[in-house]
Image (cartoon, rainbow, N blue to C red; front, top):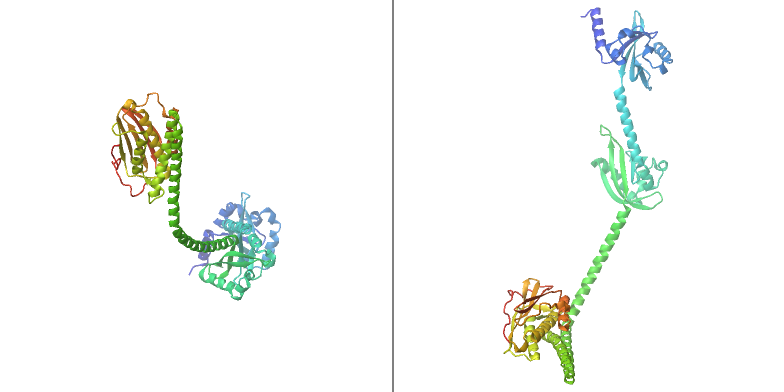
Length: 510
C-alpha cells in the first residue's frame, strides 16, 4: 500500500500531466496551484500566476462580476460547470481572448477551502459549431429563396412544419396559414378519399423516396399538374423525424402533352380518312386511266394533223410566191413544222406518250429533209450512228429542230457546185446521264471568221436558242468539213437502255 506522501506525489504527477488546464484557487481568489497545460493555455509561466488573483485570467468586461460568482460558489460548494448557458472567455498574457469551458470542484483541506478549476480551450469546437450554424443558415436562406420549386418540411404525421417562398407562390398559402395543417389539403377530394396522401408517406418511409405526378389543388381551388418527390428525414439512429416534399409545377408541359395527344389522334383519324380517300381515288384513277391514254393519243393525233394543215397552208403559199429567197424561207419553216409533226406522229403510235426512241425519229427526219431538199444519195450520203436512246418530249423537240437546221445548213453550204460528200449524225452517252449529239460533214467547212453566236442566219440563231433551251454546250470543230457537237444532260436513265457508246443501232445511206 502506498504511503500518503507517495499518493500525494502521484496525484501531483497526474494533475501536472493532464491535457486539461488545472488550477487550485482559495476563497480570496488567489491562485495556489497551476499545471503545465494552464501555462500553455494562457501563455504565463507558473511563477507569474502563483499568488495572483484569478481575475488576471478574466477579460476586463467580466472582472467586476467575478467575485460575486466566486462567493456564490463557496456559499454552496458542489461540483458543477461554471456559467451554465453563458459563453466564457479567458484572457491570455498577450491580451488575446480564447473561448473556454470551466468545471468547478470544491476542495476542503486542513489549510482551508479551495476550488479545483478545470479549464478547456473550446476554440476548435466553437469554430466547427459556428461553421455548421453558418452552413445551416445559408442552406435555409437558399431553400427559402427558391421560387420555382415548392419545398416544405412535414412532421412524421404529414403536418406542414416549414414553408418556402416557392411553396407560397405555387400553392397560394402564406406560411402562417399553412403551418400545422396536414399536407393532404393539396390533394383532390377523390385522392383524399382513397387515402393517397398517407399511402405516399408510407411508401417514402419504407423505400427511402417516393415520386409521383398528378393534379394538385391550390388555396384558391384551382388545379395544377405537379411533379412531387417525398423523402424521409431520419436522425443518426434511424428515427423518423419527418419528410421533405419538393413540388414542381409542370402544368404547361402537361397541357402541351394533352395538345400533342389530341393532335396525334386527329392526325391518326386524318390518315385513316386519307387512306380511304386514296383507295377511292385510286379506283377512280384506274377507271379513268384508259380514258386518259385515249385522250393523250387523240391530242397527239390532232396536234400532228394541225401541224400538217399548217404545212399544207405553207405549201399553198409557196405556189403563189415566185421570189426565191421568200420561197426558201417558207420551205425552211415548213421543214421545221414537219419535224415537230413527225414527233407527235411517233408519240401517237408509241405505248409511252412522254418519250420517243430517237434513233427511229432521226432516220425518218433525215430522210424527210433530204427528200424535201431534192438531194439524192448519188451526191451526198447520210450516215447514222445513234444508240437506242429514248428522249422525253421536252428534250426530243429541241434536238429534232437542231438536227433539222444543221442538216439543211450542211446541204445548202457544205457541198457547193455539185460537190459530193457525207453527212454523219451520231448520238450516244458519254456519261450515264449525259449525251453527245454530233452532226458533221466533210464539205468545204465554215470560214475561219465564222461565229455561230454572232451569225445573222435565222437557222444558226435558232440552233443557239435551242441549245440554251436544252442546257447544252455547243462546240464547232473546224477541219475536214465542219463538226457541231452538243453535250447535254438528261434527267433519268431508263433501265432498258443498256447500249454501249455509239453502237450503229441504225446506219445506212440515203
